[in-house]
Image (tube, rainbow, N blue to C red; front, side, top):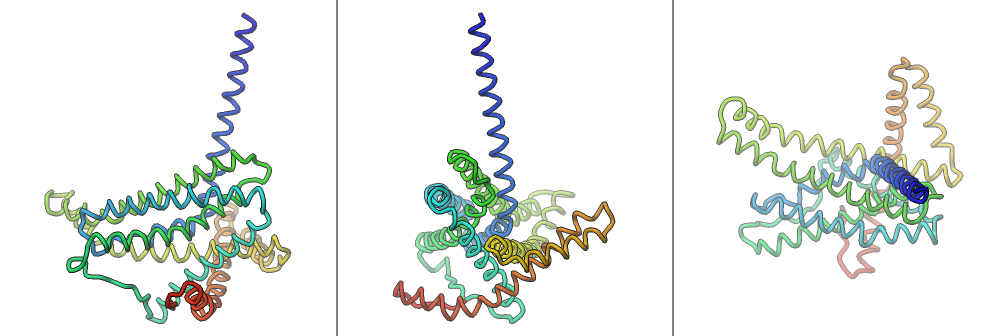
Length: 324
């Protein structure tokens, strides 16, 4: 009898450890997801353009294909690379984070510059009805998965950096796996809802009466504005998160003045604000100046990317470099 009680006690202990581990994985995954907000929002804002021009019946299958490619990017490629980095080259994590932060700043600043100057990306558009639909769809999906790989690399690196170094390798793997699956479901589930929202609204407007008919018309009317707002929020998030990553990386590497200055301004604003708003005000000041820094850095990187990096990549790959 005493043996059975001891066994049950051991099982209960194991269950407590397992429950604690699940809580740890969930907590660290949630923290990593919040840290990767800029890349996540931009992913959700960018992806809908890849289904533009296709029949409504192909929109969800295309999103599903991209989501599958995103899972492969994160789980089959980036997760093992992240674990290898954590074991053999942890010193590389901060520089890689900063490189990804610079990319976010560049992308965000480029969108701001295009909005101000009126310039547009040279986006190769095709007549879906007149061309090979299957080939065009495959091409669009491949392009989306390539873009996703860059954003996923940043997400996974940010996630890895949020996990305490003393955590075991299996715990890091579980957290990264949870982040990979959770963010992919969140992003592409949101994309699926976004691309089908206007169709759903149109269906309500045509097949229902009264409140539902009015709601359908309202959905159709607000979706273009919603997409524009999502793009603006995504751009702001990229600049804020990218700037914060670079500033924090500089602080870790010993160049602490910019990071400490913004932290000082944030604390001053927080202390000056009413107690109930101090936390929000402090965060807003930090986010604002991180975003300003990110925008300035991104604007500086635009000529570097278009006149140096793109031609260099073109020379190495043998393809013609395209300036943004």
